[in-house]
Amino acid sequence: MIIEAGYDLVQLLHPAVVANAASRRALWMLAADKDLRLLEISPVCPEFSGSLERHVAAIVAALAGSYRPVRYFALAHTMSPLDCNDWDRISRGDEALREVHDFEPDQFLGRLVLDGDHIHSSAPRYSFRDYAGRENLPRVAVISGPHFGDCSCIACSQFNEMIEEYRAIRQAAEPGPAD
Image (cartoon, rainbow, N blue to C red; front, side):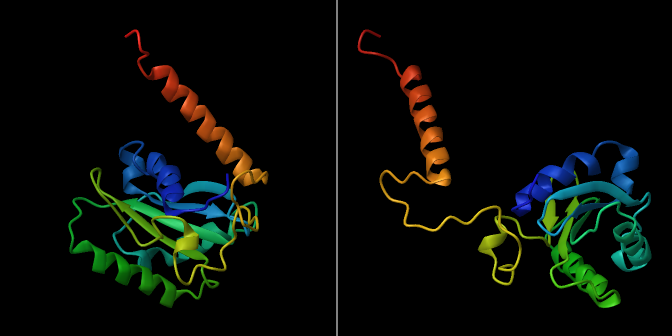
């Protein structure tokens, strides 16, 4: 899987982080290669202390211990309960992590903090291409335009097939004149 957006991070990390009581206590890492392909999701440490600074050595060891080179990573953990004031504390913790260890530019994508009902994220939430400063992150594909009318490029062909499938489903579900 190629990770293209913050919601990919949530979909991948959330099940691991909240799987059981032990996983909810751990600090988790999602590791990706230079093309943002998922390498692994694994616990960095079994007990998260509440501060990333205390776990820098474990984070660096987890990055170095990956069986394939890690270029990008995100962290995740639980914290209960979250409120609006936690955003500043989470952001300061991310900055402290960056200051303590000089990761390659954009290597640290951000952190997800979950409480069972809410998610705070310092990582991009949507497509990485929508964020200033993230222009250098890999993209899945770039197909030059223009894409009008009967464009037959792979992206437009797949999109048009999907639209036709949705139209067929919708037409089949619409009541006919005899109904």
